[in-house]
Image (cartoon, rainbow, N blue to C red):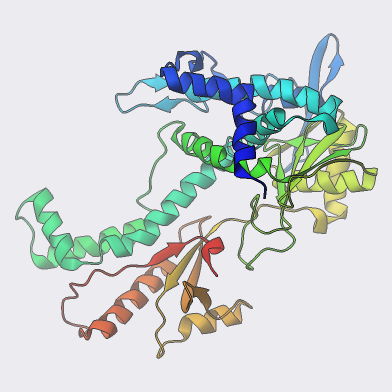
Length: 433
């Protein structure tokens, strides 16, 4: 990518970040308090770019991707929920600062977006920084994004349960600290096993109190925005051709690094992220290197973009006319190969290899995957666990393998207490080399 000092200078020149830094310096965040009860996960500033006026009011057409039903709705009601971003504090009070934060970003992004659409090749670094943050934030602010954050957190909890509670002696000591001397060793061990089973089976889960997941997503967006700034930006133009969705973006990766990889802004060098900006324009972001161009495309090419938008929709697509959204649904049925849908993230768990146990390698080969993966210069066994739902069978298989291999390494028999703390190593696929 480019000189990082150049990136920092661009963000410092952004009026949005100047305001955020001023608030941080004074520790005065009062301007972020919001009284808004209906909160949009697709900003009205974007939705209005797909509106048409009728009887003195703006309207947008909403198509339910499940039923095909089309309704004409107002941008004030579309892609919104009551108290979506409200955070319930420990004392029971409610904070609406997430909503205020999003409103602040949108106010600056609206100005930058108008300039970008009117003079795309004249985009300044400051406006590019503002829009990069706006796009990154959009990928993290939808209900689908919050659900994914919660699923990732719970998947990590399920994976760690076997490791956290694997030391029988440590578990028993902690149990007695909490509950006193009551309970026989057999009862404590039974409780330990039940705890592991409850967590790995999804019966014990982390619960998002209000908008906590969105707070995590907003922090992640800040990190992503620096990468997006340095991406290649192409403004695709085709008059009246584009629709948007209740996610407002789509991702496509034609060259995922592994068969189980999910799409991400940087999931591979050829990953593509599209964000419809109006019915006439859509920005295409690729990690190719800080380019900026404008490309007029045909209606069939614009429809391919729309089919990605359709595939990534959580429940609805939006367009300026009824015919526009209906045509996308018809095209989705006629060209299903172009309907790119988000793939559920997976928990990738690395295990130390055992020369006498190739069961994991054999399972992976049968799936058409690599038998083993190289991690930190050494070939390891691995297990891929989807996070879309609990997989207690896979967690149990990993826990059993780790215990079996730990006993073998330390020469501990099956009936003897295993005092060594077992561990598994959940990692990000991009950390593999």
